[in-house]
Each structure stands twice: as C-alpha cells, then as structure tokens.
Length: 325
Figure 1 (cartoon, rainbow, N blue to C red):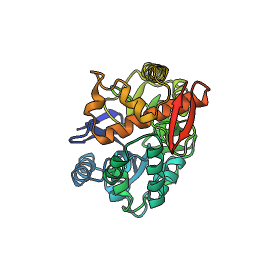
Figure 2 (figure 1 turned 180 degrees about the horizontal axis):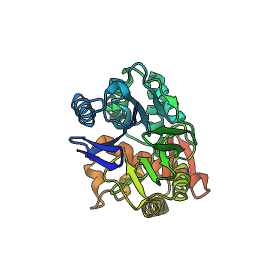
Figure 3 (figure 1 turned 90 degrees about the vertical axis):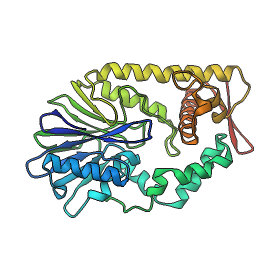
C-alpha cells in the first residue's frame, strides 16, 4: 500500500508474509533534486520488487534517492544495498553503524552465543537460531557505507528539515527524525502503535531499558502532531502512546520482581518461561525459538535494569547468571 501521509511524503507499506509484524513502513520524502527513503525492508526478492515498483509509481528514479535507516534491524535496512549507487548518501545512527560492522564478523556471533548461553537459554537451540537469524544471513551482503547521523544533525529535503534524534533502547543507535516546525516525527521502532517495541539487553549496552526510558522522555518533551512509525498505522497520539509504553514496561518490571520473590534464584530464561505472554498469558508454550529469544532478551533487560538500580542481585554459577532479590 502506498499513501501520502503529509505533503510530499509517501508511506510505502511492504508486506511481511508469515511475520507477526505483518508489514514494514518505508517513507519516501520527495525532493526537487533528490528524495530520501526512510527505512526499507528485509533483503527478499519480493520485497525488493515491491519497493522498486513503489518508486516507479512515485515517479522517483532510484539513482536520485538517498537513504536513512532509523535503526540497524534487517527489516529496516536490508534492501538498502540493492538500491544504493554512485552518488547516493546513506545515514544511520553511529552506534548502529558500529553494530553492523561487528555483525559482519564471526567473533560477534561467538560472543553473542556465549552471552545467550550465560542467561540460561538451552544450548541445543542457540546454533539453530543464530543460523536462521536474518542479520546473520545478511553478514555476507555488501556493506552500505553509512554516514553517521549524529544527534542534532539536520537533513533538509522536500521542504522538510529533519533533525536526527538519537533514541537508544530498541537498538543502540535507533534514531528518530523530527521536523520542529511541522511537528512531524519519524519514530522508527522507538514508538509504535498497537504493539510494544522490543527492548532487549544488548551485549554492549549497560542498561537497554534505562536507555529506552530516557529516550521516551526525550520524545515526550516534543510537540508531535503526526507520528510516522516503522510498523502499523501513523498516529496522532504520540505522547499518550509514550505513557502507555512506559506503564507496560513498568508492569513487566513488577512481574519480574513477583517471580523472583517466589523463587530463590533464577536465570533470565527460567523467569521468561514463567511470565505471561500474549493475550492469553500462556503464549510462551507456543512460541517458536526466535520469539523465545526475543522474550528472554527482554527479561535480561528487565533484570539488568533492576540490578543496576539495586533491586536484585546477580551471581555467576557454572557460567549461568542467576538473579535473586
């Protein structure tokens, strides 16, 4: 689906068949000489063809397009290398550029495997999950020479002045774009309607959840009339959605503390298996391995936030981190 969401800005909704996210939003900001494509999709041929057809429909030549990745997840930047060419510019938050570079190396995945193991994830599942991870598969794709989108940098295109706002949490380098005059926000996956952005504990971040809370405060201080997210529908209630997301994560922190209070010591994976997931509360038993990975990663983020705030303790027992009150 392609629709104009603001003068000169097209929302391109690329389907994600079989994916719970359902679709990813790209935004094409049309300029007089060059246009800006904000986010793309997985590096799948059907997705490439869909996006190429959308550019044709918009009347924009691919060699007149620059690129902005709100963050480094493959459903947002996977196709950039297919369209990037001589004369193109590509931008993304510095921390995510560095993350992408590390993810091109085997040592990153060895370190990640050890990290996941240390939080109690069953060893037999990890190698299968890593092998099937799209970022792992994409490590052999040509690297896009991203230019760091530093906090406060302004990208002028199509009558818009888009200020880069570093909002770490969902990823280390997640970056929003904000037009102060028009009160327009491209939120990436920092703030979504209908679903809660995943906030997992990144290996190289001390406190992913704490960073996410501070990033919510940063956006909460802005006047936003229209929010254009990376998934689902545009929103007119950015500030209200921030309040809802903050309460959601606080309720998860409370649930984590309740589970710890009923057990002496637990790994993050064990705690995740006892939490309520999905509308029915028992979705964990039906989760495939990848969703368990994300869920357990979120629980690590809750536990590390609680630990750094002095609410829980952690000790290493035979290579597994166990948490207690």
